[in-house]
Image (cartoon, rainbow, N blue to C red; front, side):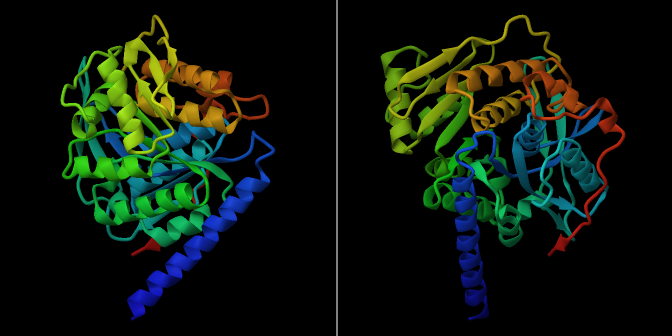
Length: 364
């Protein structure tokens, strides 16, 4: 009985919070520069052979969006440890909202061993980390009153049941009941039940962003034709893409194609926009290129830019990130040329003078 009462209280509180969020978003609708993005998922330490950096796709996306002048609320869970302090400092330095950073009293901040090769990156992700235990109620508290237009999520943070349930609750209520748009950046990783996780995630999404390889995987898993991989411009390929969009009631599909550019398919499966990649990029590594694409696209949409301009700018930032080591640059100065005039940006001194740490409130 007590457990049932707690569940009812959480649901009632959640409904109130999402209603307040929807009302706040409606009040700010006339000002396109206002609003923001709720980003939910993992934040962790990427351990390279020669360096350690804060990472995780949601963390990367939130930092880039905040540096670009968009409000970004990151919902993740960290350990009560030094690695967690590094994540907190990194988020604060880029201007990410910190209310969504939960602290786990027992489990460590997540880590990933990264091996970079000439053709691809290999990731070894530690198990049973703090971000596997996202708590719903602190997440709901963090977004209360947020004037968010989008909710961003991926698949990796859904590897554990607790985080999966929290993410899906947020995505379902944000998108289905209160009119926000849910953005799924697939970021496929090898893990148990990944096909089922993808299927359930696609059912929650409005906007799906994938790379070309991920798209072909989805067509093989969920397409009506078993002929994948299909030639990009073939009628069978276009029919398969249209069927995928209709199957999961997506409003659009964004495909990043590396050196071949990007493509945008509308709600009917029509190829509405196709753009070329930035030329003559001196690639340092490709870590975080997809994350920066998502960040710029969402930030540009929040700021009221056109679809064409949002996609072109996203491609530009992704190319620029490929020219540096790591997914997030050391300073917000890197983003200055894309920022709206009213958005300030911090100097390289931010690296040394990170914002003071918020008081940790441990959960569980």
